[in-house]
Image 1 (cartoon, rainbow over the protein chains, first blue to last red):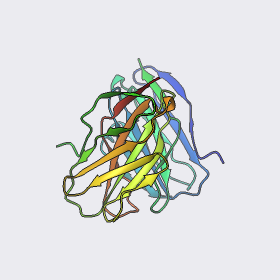
Image 2: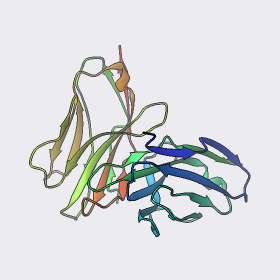
Image 3: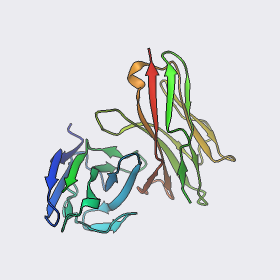
Length: 111
Length: 116
């Protein structure tokens, strides 16, 4: 049982480049979320989804897009990377009353 | 205003001692949930314990217990008989609204170091 799988684990981008962070879960969870963690801080919610085809903004959505075409996958897109988006990104999923299960994170550096 | 406050940036504890990590929260929603997560140096987020606002008893999970004082809006994590492997960052988080809601608000964390 893989749980929540994030790829890649590390990525370096140049300012202005675009990329997609991948997130997949095999637990048939209806809820999925993306968080970012900056140094010395807790996680902050970027976007979330309550099911396939439904997404909404979290606390810090600017500069990021998401879509949820399947239950399993919830990719996060950076359209034009900025140095302020340098962070560790976590994907999470949950079902019903259960806690959020987190992936291992993607460490992203924007030069 | 911060919704989750963890006032201890760092704590140092001797192995086998009990440790309490503080967490206070702010919400006007009568339905909410409180979570504690552990983040070791390897970086993953590990769920430890959950307390619902309507739960009558304090949550316990093995060596972890949650000291929930609703009137004071505090949800402190207690680790009994600490071990070297407990050294990590610990985050308190809150979910507001119904139990299916998934927006979590995190505190800034407490770095716990267990000394041998």
